[in-house]
Image (cartoon, rainbow, N blue to C red; front, side, top):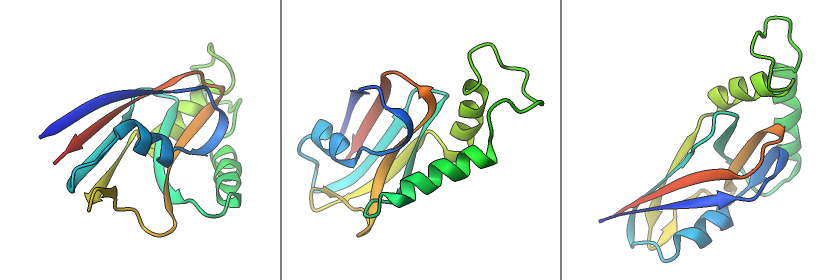
Length: 136
């Protein structure tokens, strides 16, 4: 059986934000076994699976990504939507737009320290839409 639903996230500032509990709440009761696939339907934000225990990891991700893909780089020609737009597209391509998590015993089968991040790459990205597909 397959279930698919849409989750609209409220606006978040640029950065890496844990959304695991929001996804679990939106999904409701999960099947005993299966897979949850989550896709973000935007080109300037991404999804990642990483450290959920120490908030400094999220700050380090933000600092490194801004160093790796800076604003106002002279090679950018797509500049009409703001100085953070082209870097956001590049960062989203590097991080990716989806995560897939196994479901075991009715729960997301994440590692002890793993959480799902919304990676917001715009200063003011606005509402973000996620498509959650649960396959059992």
